[in-house]
Amino acid sequence: MHIRKVNAYGVNNYISLNLYEYISPRNSLERLHNSDVARQCEKAILQAKIDALDNVEDKTPLLFKWIDEVVVPRLQNPLKRLLNFLDSDIKKKSIKEVAEPKYFFYIKSLFQNEIEEKKYRGRVGHKGRGKRIMTAQSYINYWSSLRACIKKAYPQHIDTFPKDIGHLKTNEKLGKSDIFYTNEEIKRLWETPVFDERNYYKNIKGTIGVKEACFFSLYTGLRISDIINLEWGNIKKNANGVYYFDIIMVKTNIRLRNSFPQFARDLIGERKSKREKVFSGLQGSSYKNSYREFTYNRWKAWSQRAKIPKGKTIHTFRHTYGNNLYKACGNLYEVSKALGHKSIKTTEEFYAPKNNFEMNGNLMDGLYNL
Image (cartoon, one colour):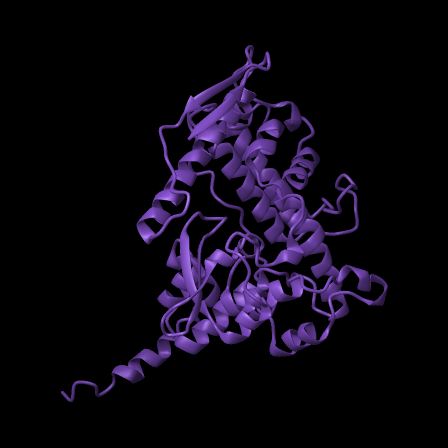
């Protein structure tokens, strides 16, 4: 495999990565080899982007240019608008200047104050002066994205990453009703059509769209990013007649296999060729277009007609799956594996019940007959 670099004069330069890939992997070892090669290619491409951003006079690119390179597309502009609102000088600063501990802690303090005061309005296109008040969780997500963005610049552009920078603190806590869908809400979504009468022409027969995707997530726990990229080659059936999927997750690049019921299989219709996308109605010109135009916008209109409370999103289907799976099996480790969490602490935070320590004494009373 090779990578192509184009210099400032437009001259192509091909560099060998000394890697090979199986065109049609036949077993698990070959598939694991291909996923490892994909990770190494991503690192090489990221390094090439870093080199392309380098300036002859100043080797450290501006923070906003770096955000465009390493932050996921849907968060790039909102993050830059929020940073510009907090400190208008930040758009002129390089990564090295922002990563200085004193300034980085100052930015963190601005985020923390904003959580409490909520002066910023997150409406797109209003430069922080819209009508929508952002939740504390949104500020936490943006701060995490900024930390990850700066950390990716080490060691190419910054010597050290600020230690003990920490996370933001908030007193706002989501209740269980905010994290999961109720049975009544699920029934309303199932009975409500995605498109109203004015947009009937968008509902093309034979395409598997956002409604099927959401309910497939409800029965499998997959993230929407994995559902958009799901191919028919990932859908399989074993000798016992059990349907399951075998994928490399987009977010974590970890392999995940999990079974799903017949109802979820019926949602996706007739099987097609291996390379075809399962959810054909979600495919746009790019992943950003697929998510925004064919998934999020349609979900928003559909959920409003179904009278779903604000704050519950497509990702809530994944949380609902994890919650119901834990109720059914009572095994937190199994839920963690089914959702593909890197750490069981993540699973415990959302799905584990509170510790009822008062009950433990009664359970042990008289156990040993002493």
